[in-house]
Structures are given as structure tokens and as C-alpha cells.
Length: 167
Ligand SMILES: CC(C)(COP(=O)(O)OP(=O)(O)OC[C@H]1O[C@@H](n2cnc3c(N)ncnc32)[C@H](O)[C@@H]1OP(=O)(O)O)[C@@H](O)C(=O)NCCC(=O)NCCS
View 1 (cartoon, rainbow, N blue to C red):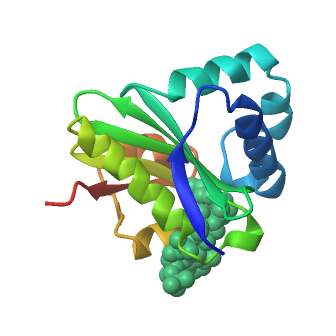
View 2: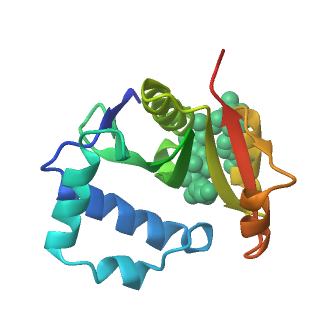
View 3: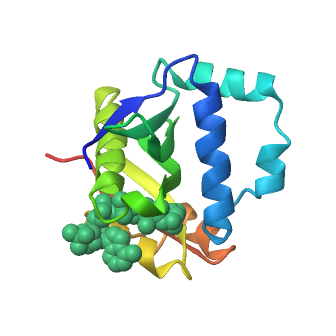
């Protein structure tokens, strides 16, 4: 399966809604948002979300597409001044797992964040989500043991992890 990763286009709100809802149905335990909360969003909400993420350096969604045009992965990131990029909503469709799609999505986030001067990518992963922990560890993230991000994660059973900008 050949997969490419692209920043969302302004008009791709239905693709975004579909894959986000699929991810929340498939992996409800992995995310802070519930399926019914996301499903309650109006078309206007999704339109605005896609549009705001399609340009600029404040926020972004990347979509991974296979060679038949199916969306098989998604990730969201946001800028946190002065120099952090926060990564959320990471999901790869079961049929596309272990093909480096997840690694490509994270690399796309890191490349985008480097373009506006980010020093690192930060994320939270629930401690019970061992496959994701192993994934992030394998692609170069390390657990933050101290500091506000570690503390805020601990409060809901999650680890904060970071990957520094490549030198
Ligand atoms: C975690 C997830 C995003 C990984 O995506 P993926 O595309 O399968 O990952 P990759 O193929 O890029 O994996 C890269 C490496 O990470 C490690 N890895 C990935 N998934 C793993 C798993 N389930 N168990 C152990 N190691 C894993 C492997 O070392 C892998 O390399 P290899 O296949 O050559 O051994 C995917 O399993 C997923 O969507 N899970 C459900 C949602 C979720 O938990 N999201 C994270 C929320 S914080």
C-alpha cells in the first residue's frame, strides 16, 4: 500500500469528520473526546475546523491517503507559543497499521512545526495505551518526568512525551 500524507485542504471537512469519527469509534480509550461529542458537531463546525487548519502556523490536520484515495490516517497539531508544537488525535486505520503511516504523520507534524521555529513536539498518551507508548518510544519520543506537562498528564493517567527538533 502506497500512502501519502498531506495537509488538509480547506474543503475537506467531510473527510476530516469521517476519519475523526472512525477513530473515536475504533479507539475510544485512546482519546479525550467521546464519539457522541464529536458526532454532535454541526457541519459548520467541521467546515470551520478544516478551514482554520488548512493554512497558517496556528493549527493543522494532516490526512494520510492510500493509492486508491482512501483516508487511512489522521493527526492534529497546534502551536503553543513560544516554541512547542502539541500533537493530538493520532490514529491510523487498522488495515494500514505497521506500515509507517503513523511515523509519516508525526514527521509531517514535526516538519510543519520546524517551519515556524518549534523546538519540540509534545503529546500525551494514556499510560494504559501500551501499543501507542511503544510506537512513540520507537520513533524517538521520550517521557517527560517533571514539569507542568508531566503533571497535567499524570492527573488523568497519561504520560507527556516529547521529541526534540532534529539538529
Ligand atoms: C499507535 C498508532 C498510531 C501507530 O500507527 P502505525 O502506523 O501502525 O505505526 P508505524 O507503522 O509508523 O510504527 C512505527 C514503529 O512503531 C512501533 N509500533 C507501532 N505500533 C506498535 C504496536 N501496536 N506495538 C508495538 N510497537 C508498535 C514499531 O516499532 C513500528 O515499527 P515496525 O512496524 O517496523 O516494528 C496506531 O496503532 C493507532 O492508530 N492506534 C490506535 C489509536 C491510538 O492509540 N492513537 C494514539 C493516541 S495517543
